[in-house]
Length: 367
Ligand SMILES: Cc1ncc(C[n+]2csc(CCOP(=O)(O)OP(=O)(O)O)c2C)c(N)n1
Ligand SMILES: [Mg+2]
Image (cartoon, rainbow, N blue to C red; front, side, top):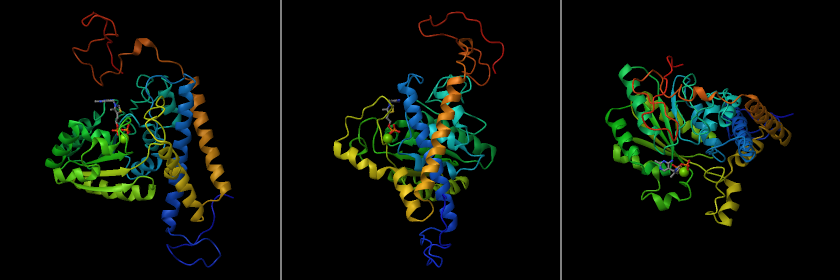
C-alpha cells in the first residue's frame, strides 16, 4: 500500500474514517507528484556528489540539495513552449524540464551522451529541444541573455514566457539592474526568479544586500513582485503560475523564493562558516522531510509508500550513473564543434597555451 484514501474536500469531515485533509483532491495529487519529483532530484544530487568523490565528475559541481521544492514548483508552472535560463546550480531544473536523468548525469561525467555532448559539464547543461537555454557559470551571466530572449519573443509577437532563475548573491551584479530595468521599460514576457538560499558562496544575504528582502527591489522598476516559501512546492507553484500569467500578458515579474542550501556552496565546500546551531536547524528546513511529513499528516502517503518512492528515486539515480559511466568520452577533435550555433568567420580554434593566432584547420561544417 502506498497512497491512502482521504476526505474529498478541503476541511471536510471524514465520513469514512480517513484522515481529514487541508488540501483539495487536486492539491493532494499535485503534492504527491511534486514530492516524488523532489525525491528524484534529491537522490540524483546525492549520487552526483558520490560520483564527484569517486573522481568520475570533474570541475565544478553545485547541487540543488534543499532547493528541490522550489525547483519542482517553479518548473511545473511553465508550459513546454516556455524558455528557462538558470545558473550553475541547475541539475534539478534540467530533470524537471524533461531531460532524462541519464543525459544529465552523463553531462556531469563529461561523456558524449550528455545533454551538452560532454563538453559543458555540470554548469553548462543546455538543450534547445526542452527549451533549457543554460546553465551559466558566470554569476548573472544568464540575465542579459534571458532578457534578450524575452525581447525576441516580444518582437515576434509570440506568447512564450522566459523564466530566468538566479541566486540571492546575483542580485548585486550590475546585469540584474540593467536587465530588470529594460524588461520593465519594454514590457517583456519574463519572470525573474531569485532563489534566496540566504548565502552567496559563504556570505549571508544580510551582509551583502542593503535590502535583504529581495523581492522589494522590484519597486525600483515599478515591476510586480512576490515572496514565497520555497520549502513549500504547492505555494511556489501557485505563486509562479500567477507570475507566469502576468509575464505572458506583458508584465515582467520578480519572484523571490525563500529556500535553503543544505550543504556547501559546491561539493568541495565543507561550509565551515556555518555554526553548529545553524547546521542543526537545517533538518527542520529540509523540504524532503517537511513535505514527506505533510503527506503523512494529510493521509496521502504512509511510511511504506514513502520508502517505495525513495527506492524508486535511488534506482533512477543509480541507472543514470551506470548510463553515464558506460558512455564514451568525447573525441578531442570535436572540442570546438559546438562553440557557435552557426559558422563564424573569425572563430579561433585555440587550446590553452597555444599562441593566440595559431593557424588551425577549421571544421567545414558545424553540427
Ligand atoms: C561574475 C562572477 N563573480 C564571481 C563568481 C564566483 N561565484 C560563483 S557562485 C558565487 C555566489 C553566488 O551566490 P548566489 O547568487 O546566491 O547563488 P547560489 O550559489 O547561492 O545558488 C560566486 C561569488 C562567478 N562565478 N562569477
Ligand atoms: Mg544564494
